[in-house]
Image (cartoon, rainbow, N blue to C red; front, side, top):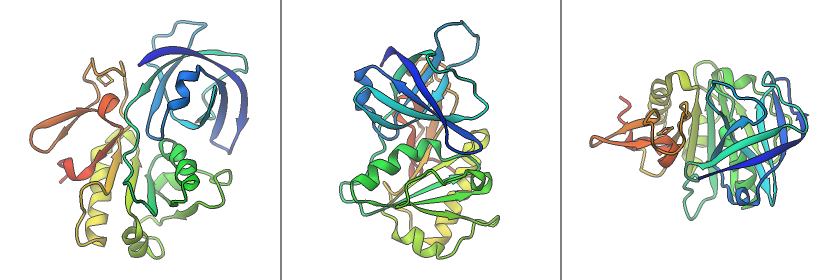
Length: 246
Ligand code: FES
């Protein structure tokens, strides 16, 4: 974990709701992996707010692209303080053919970096958008990615096959009630599969991260067996078989 500075070199609009910041970053950040993130704050002016949680989309050498909501204001040439790397990479199985990504009531931002990484490693990827996530315009995503827009009742064509075919599933939900939404997803998978093994269904938790270093305990998640994990250190992806959801 260290603090570095980045420069916003360019800003591009990707759809009606999101923009991408093209950053020149410290080379130490080139090792960042899908699942890991950064805490960002403009350096030119002090502000009392928490750092913004930035999810990289692509990283190469000293360049990084992050996707941010269109309503957040940035300027080319702006210098940003980055704290990170936050969290652990997504723990993919050693042999992996098909991965299912699922976003429920939240944009799939935290999952985007994994799409390019998985497709580049010849893993098939399906992205299912449920609830308000269906409003996320996907025209800029890779054509090899299968994209499914679910219905209000959580249904979509070939749902049993999509779930059965996946070797692993990573789920993001709106942060206002993560446990409640993960419980709905858990119930859905229980209906569609005979059992949910460990290392299969992961919740990607996105709480506020005031410190990012495991010190403030604001991001604790309780697990089975009266244990806890900090999302900033042990997350963001937690195996949902370990989480007492129901
Ligand atoms: S953000 Fe402070 S412990 Fe995780």
